[in-house]
Length: 281
Length: 322
Image 1 (cartoon, each protein chain N blue to C red):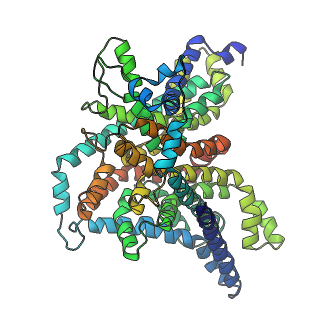
Image 2 (cartoon, chains in turn red, brown; image 1 turned 135 degrees about the vertical axis):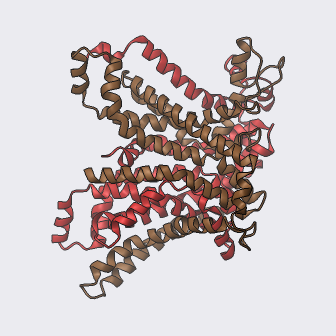
Image 3 (cartoon, rainbow over the protein chains, first blue to last red; image 1 turned 90 degrees about the vertical axis):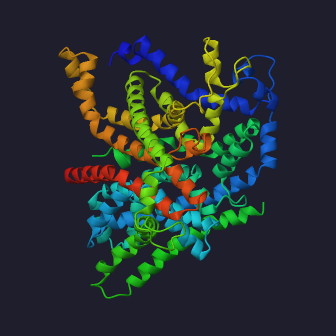
């Protein structure tokens, strides 16, 4: 590959840089606004903050954290997201192991059913599940959302893990079996350690999906402040504070901070995981 | 502070329960006669998953179908009344129209933008930061994205200093400012733009990986033979990318069908921007009509069937190659 091709013609650079600027601009604008005083946000655009006199403040973050339940909902989001990430991955790993390496009647039919369920919109399930939850008094509790997210996340998780488990070399399993390793030993000492990339990417997916979810939380938690996650609280701020934008900017950023850290720290796995699930074959 | 034990318990208990389950079940199975073990064991491992999927996806889908023939409180059967009501409901028709708009515009633009950026980024040394920056919005919730984009679309009447980026640009160019989110019917496109912004990175990352999988010799050989860059793309790159493009397109179409958050946060479905998922939510929680909400859900499910059929066919073909 020649140097000129590697550097590309000038129009390519200009187009790319323009696109990247376009894509980052909205986020950047909000970050800048979140550090500006309320009056400034309401009366002038974010770009005016880029020239002196500089007038930045942490006030928005302070006021939103102390007055709008945001600290509570941050903890709620954590309490919801971590189990709702761990449970489906564990349950999916059990199932994917059986689908990839055990023989049983209906195995292919059941797996095909799971692939079909990948596209079922979860809206279809809301009414009956909500009625069942109300009957047993589970609405408005954390386990209600953990279990729901597990159910909704499983088809994708099993699909992805089964593809990965199935691609592990057969010889390894035969060798383990000859050494007298049982099912549990093979699963915990062989399959799981070899599948760390797939498990990690799945964890990021599920984490982002649950953390950023609004619909499931709105429906099964019923919008109570004490259990509301960040998305619900911020969505409420949007409608109630309409004009109190300064708080909204800070709130939006606090809600995005954790997923951004998770994403930036693990993006290597993220991309690899998407590929394991879809591009293969 | 008093929340920390609660958070810790929420993490530890489910893990303990799942590990306990698999160890106890395996222990029990090893107490059964040797010859039944291979027949029992798989069900131990797939059992929990089947239970979850059965309870949260399969059974509710069937039940929704039944509920769609019952009244608001699911007490009496009303035949196809709910279906005739929603078929004649202009707000439902409008929502369906908007979903079609979402499917066409969102899927189309995301695919084209993703492919274009993947092709361009392939030619520069700073490819990976470009991909990261464009992918970044995927980590941002639509609730936060809605807030972010309110600053782009903000509107002040003419003569007052504009605070929204888009109106500042438009007025600087000498035009009038527009209330982008309330102007019918173009406001739908401004909502879809937010979703495009959030999802282009997804298409980009997958398409770019597929692009890297195309053998360089193939492209070089075509170029040596005198093919132009456009011909190389049309005859080699694009056909080889097609399987990946269909996978991405399927994911995007399903997202467009389920679109909810962006509309809920930015317009609440007002100003003719309602979509089917939000319309169903309103029927369920504002109108408290489980029957009609279920009927809308069934309509949504019907629209997914072609995608489902296509997905299964693709999966079968893929398994056959394996």
